[in-house]
Length: 309
Image (cartoon, rainbow, N blue to C red; front, side, top):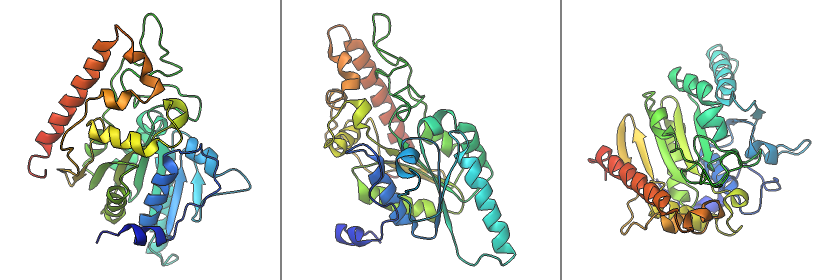
């Protein structure tokens, strides 16, 4: 049963304040929501990245549950070993409690460096929830492009100049890549819609096997937005169909939100400094391509969700 805002606010939070993330960052809200769904009997693994470096600054920690810091590339493999050891100990009667297992990783540690270990975790059917807080680049190390970086975005490795106008490659379809492993549950969510994220997290932890959540996570510093703008930019991402909210349950697609009057992609890019060069004369073809790709992906999703819209 869905919880209301009062019930949600009164739930125990297993991610404590006092972390060092940037003011207005999206991922603390994501983590807090997911951990409320997970509960206290949860083991966390953090890939190297923004979340790890800001929440585990020795001798302090923001985590009220056991937390493992892995390398950039092996968070899924690390927690696979922990989950396997837990199952072995429980089978022998050494462990009584039921535990949840969750990985938090950024897009660099998911789309790119960590993709191999993630694929192995999903294929081996470890009962682990993998949460990607997707901010569209390697933000912890200075805004380098990842294969989750949007087309047209300015990054330090795809700088805007006379030849290139930012990143000229389209994003990898990480959600469908995860779903292609035939796992029980895959979903895409956004930071502003906490009820949707909370319900999807609960489904993920209840799944009979691995689950994957891709969550829109604004980065104020490298997107060039205000510290008070995370929720608004998240809404714009969804209302322009740049970031659809949907889930794939045992192979069945379901659309969770359909904008009544979708906004043009320009409404999403205008507030962000990483896209400001696209508003200059002569760069309209790049915006047109962004709109075309967004519209094509939306129509593709509608076809896949035809029975669950």
